[in-house]
Length: 244
Image (tube, rainbow, N blue to C red; front, side, top):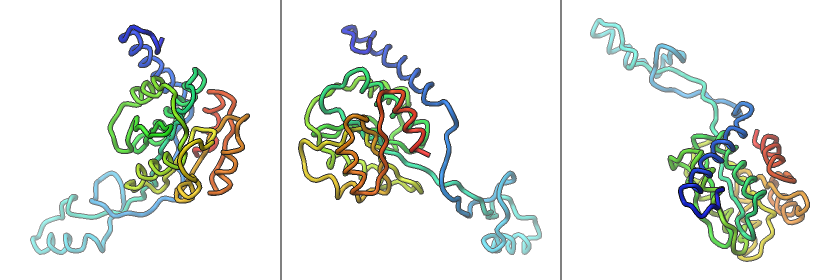
């Protein structure tokens, strides 16, 4: 239905598919990973402990004026959890059949669920197209629908895609910056992708389980992680394992 000649029917089909895919990806609870850190921020009544050193000027001024200090004059310490930023790279070279589209849509939905504040989705072949930029505001349903509308063509420039992902993640202040490459990682155009892969903080490659040789070489060269998959549902399971 997403490929129907009737434009309205195709649009509605993609919207419905997007909602269904997101519901499927949302099974389980999104988790954060890593060690929290102590930060100082404006005090509020509900959370945090008063930071005497950071609030001393406000306390002295309030005492001099013979009044209690206002809550917004004080500083408090809070534990903050580290964030995660994810850039998903969808290989659109070759044909985008039903299984490949479903796998890509599920991967995009998992990224939206795992890192709702900071996730990007890029489609690539010999060029890169941004479906969603990292800090762009776009409904997850729309992102998934646009992934489902992809048509495959062109050769595969993995290095170009990895460099584009690095540029997406560079401005992020997240503690964890992850690139997920949904591809067999076979290079058919462009240069050596290994330098770009080594420059990333974290790389996860999700490849068809019967076409893993190029993906294995890539993760071995850069210390990334690899998940082999046999279809859309195994993509979902693989991402649950590696995107902790």
